[in-house]
Amino acid sequence: MALRNLRVDGDSLLRKKSKPVTDITKGVMILLDDMVDTMKHSSGAGLAAPQVGILKRAVVIEHEGTVYEMINPEITDMDGTQRSQEACLSIPGMVGDVERPNKLVVTYTDRKGDEHTMPAEERLAIIVAHEVDHLDGILYKDRATVFRHRKPSDDEEE
Ligand code: ZN
Image (tube, rainbow, N blue to C red; front, side, top):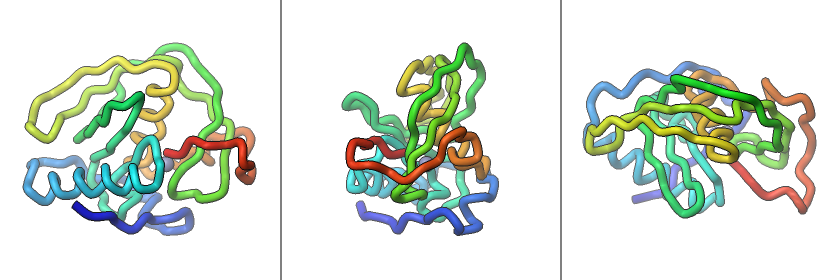
């Protein structure tokens, strides 16, 4: 278990498309462990592998006390819209207003190789959509209608 260095906006790697994970190797498990450590250490709600310099389709999310490790996550259904404020560990000091689906369904594989189909709504749907975007080289600021410097009252980071 270890912390990994975070890539920040301006790093071209954040704009590349990540490749599917074909084998859940020891290296993938160590990556997931390190991503969870790095997310918690940075007080983030989620982290995608490209944010630590790895172009593999893997994300970790912490929501209401549960940690999700998603390998090859794919959004298969979306419904409604919601607009809220987002931030990103790779864009320090900034926040933005983004429109996201209100509900979605994400399919993913866990580290044991088991497949999951998980509905998510409200805040969790935002975090899933934000992290899956990272795997396609998309940053929330690309979708933001307002993009501004963080104030002390702002607190969430993905
Ligand atoms: Zn992010």
